[in-house]
Length: 162
Ligand code: 4NP
Image (cartoon, rainbow, N blue to C red):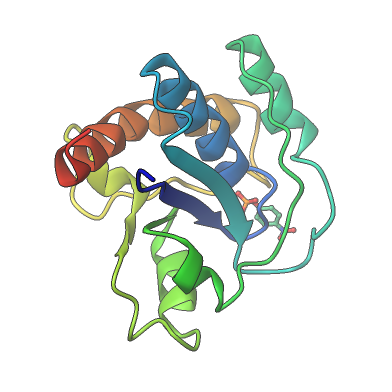
């Protein structure tokens, strides 16, 4: 059986940024004909919104671009370190929170900021939290996810010979 690669996007609430990244990356993977090879999920470091669909503002922005966000919020679990080959955090706080979890030190996969895969982004760039801002923030998150998703898929293809 061919290896299945798994990718998890992580933010704080798992209702705005990481569901957007999940939806955008899934579209890119579908277009590349790799949806049977790459499993895609998202999670939040916090549990505040567990069980909720993505924020209506994130869903509206994605729908405007032709992508449906269907994720239901869940908290990232230490056991996810065993389940995912690539774990992409939206900002430094998310990354720090992930690194504090049991199992993080022994994690053998790729744990990084999502925008590290966008060659046009400044070093250490984050995907800023749009939750308390205006609608422009949601469009910006979407655009950042588009750029980083392209680089992330290139990296996975080269890592895994796809
Ligand atoms: P996300 O945005 O981390 O991109 O899902 C947030 C959603 C909710 C909250 C913070 C950030 N909150 O504090 O409830």
